[in-house]
Every structure is written in C-alpha cells, then in structure tokens.
Image 1 (tube, rainbow, N blue to C red):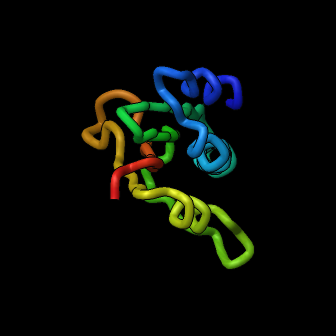
Image 2: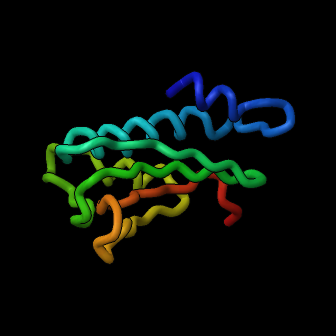
Length: 109
C-alpha cells in the first residue's frame, strides 16, 4: 500500500501533506473490509487536483458499523477524513453485491 501511495506523490501531483493520513485511512478501510467480511476486498485510490479519494469494496452489503468503544474503526475515518460515506454496490441483484466505503482527504474547505 505504501508503494501505491508513493506513486501518487510526484512533483506533478504533490501529496506530501496527505500521505500519512492516507496511509492510515487506506489501512483502516481495507483492514475493515478484510476483517469483517467473508469474501474478497479491494482498495481504490483516486486523485483529483488537491483531493485524494480512498475507497474499499467488500462483499457484505450491510452498512459499516462501529464494533464498540474499544475499536478505532470509523472513529479514525471520521476524525482524519474531510468527508466519508458508503453505498451499496449492485443492490439490484445483478453481479457481485457488496458495499463501497470511501473517504476524501485534501478537499477544499
């Protein structure tokens, strides 16, 4: 994951102020997708101007939940991200169902 984020950090697309937070959030999103579901998971990164969007897909269509007071989970995402959310994927029943949990960093205020 660090190698992928380093690829996004270039003179043409500077992200130095976002990289530490991006590493933390990418790890949290993908870790949750792997830890709390039975199927495959994937991480997607998208860079647009100064903003970086990170998203994790998994095979469980249920909303993300915070497991409890001893878990950092969504608290980290909510604290460090400028914005975040989720949506169901293929809820109509065609193709693989699941959800996509995303967050953004570097979004203009």
